[in-house]
Length: 324
Image 1 (spheres, rainbow, N blue to C red):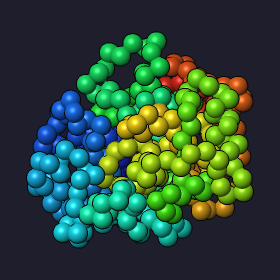
Image 2 (image 1 turned 30 degrees about the horizontal axis):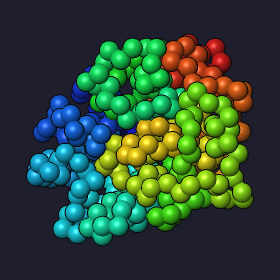
Image 3 (image 1 turned 45 degrees about the horizontal axis):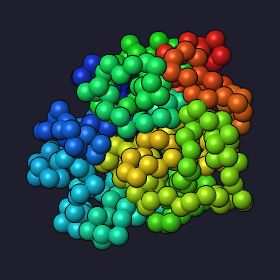
Image 4 (image 1 turned 30 degrees about the vertical axis):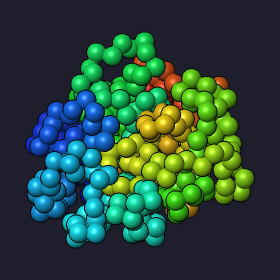
């Protein structure tokens, strides 16, 4: 966590912003209309700042087909530089050293990771291309770009943390899926038919949908699994929300191809909580018992988070510093 926080600061010193949660390959940026959803992760952009410059340079030289979508990488011939950097793996999660269960194509064995980026409490359409759609009306459900520091093709700087960098979470961790059809609380993702951002009942059904270590509901598509690829910027793989507390269920309103409609808390095999790094570079352990607001709360588009101290830590500009 500490090393990742340092890498974020070094990137900011060089580029005057933090990386986007997901962006197109630098050689074909800006994104084309049909490929923005398949962008590369923040982790990829940070490689030169994590002593992984040679890996970054190699990935820059790939053919255009792979550049447009990191999930098309054929690892059988490229494994040496596609393996997950150690900085992105948690020693307590032995599954992260394995390849993900991305799909049935054995040539798409994607290397997993544990570090995930904060999307605040913005649960609706986190995959929207905010970089090329900066004028989305604030009254729409789609506009969740201000609810966290990281979004698709949106590069925010330190000045976006009006609540203070010591009050805003940058990254945490997520346990990866244990199998292609895993439905455990840690790592598995379950599908529900209703949205979460404006429906407290559905949100609580997700939260309480545990039977021991299992969840009720429909098993998600295999590429929705947590930590499925360190290279792809999907929120289900490399993001989290500050809505439900750590180590609670991951749920999505899967709509046939996009993963941004969901609720993804951080998770880990540590006792009682997860590790985090804040935007000031400090690291903190967040307890599973952290205050996360009222059971009737729903997402708001501006102002204070409705999800207690946990929600306040995820929003950079909610005006909740007095809570922290």
